[in-house]
Length: 165
Image (tube, rainbow, N blue to C red; front, side):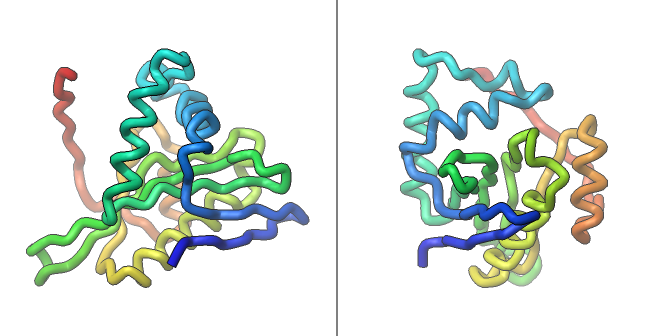
């Protein structure tokens, strides 16, 4: 079943759907318009092939779901990625990870982000996930408050090791 959900917020209609490769330019723009990750993302045309390759890999993986939300003009105004991970821990529980949540800055605070996360949690349940997890950069204190309002708790300390590419 392909995800398609409509949200009506403050009189405006939004469509949540699976991303397609034609959305790539708008997705890159959303990811690049982030003060914490601006240096990691690029809208330069010469970098597009790396994004296209990553998109195709996500699209082929049944454990991945890349979502976009478009407004009434069909502009992509938000995105998130869901990853479903089977595991042995917790008696074989499947986990769903929410990543790369972005809402266009002009739409923040209108309820779109909450609607997206609520949809994602319901989708996780529908697909048999026993838990939803996400990470958030420690500098994103407003995002932390947002996730806490939606019922998420800070339960772990995260670590990263950046590998040279």
